[in-house]
Length: 282
Image 1 (cartoon, rainbow, N blue to C red):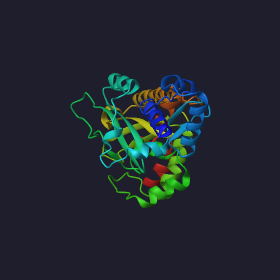
Image 2: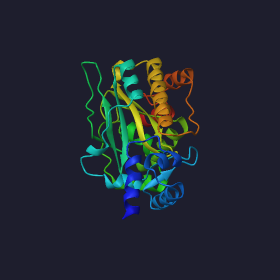
Image 3: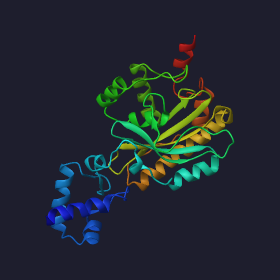
């Protein structure tokens, strides 16, 4: 029973520490001998209740622990908007939100609504379609290819607009470009005349379970310069959140001039595949 109580204490200590906690911190906070807590953490890690970052050596909750809190409404995953999300929303006036993969779904867990009269319909707890939302695809792009194909094949791929990507092979090719460029763009794919950009958020172990996204009415972000600015802001926010969660690996963010050039050549707002889009429309 004593071991069970200690294990619950460790899980409780990690529950609100997304940046991760070191072995020494847990030792001091829980007053558990180093040898005992090290053995306990090894057992919890082997059962996927905790995970340890190979770079920062910090511990955080694992998939098995997170699964215990899963339920259909996703209420337990909803959080207050972190500062980087608030900063982009304040600077842009647009809708900015944070998503997280829960089981096989990607859900909006934090949201700041646009200050403009014309707002977009995004709500807390909303499930984002895996094939049509940039905020979901940027998470999928960093998952195991076998899992990705299984999720895309088994989930309905509704045609929300004429521009919605629905073919599995096309989506898998698109995800490869998302990994290459480090962000994703959705332009009139989920909603007509809505443009969105999303960046991954890495956890301490280098996994991507979350994304940060900005969505705006397409008419407010028509110029390559504005789209490049918002893309850079979203990428910077993703970097700040990743560092806050304990990720110490590399994050490459294109220069503003590179992004302007990408958007200047884009077809229908898609910066990485203008040639493909142009060919499809012929």
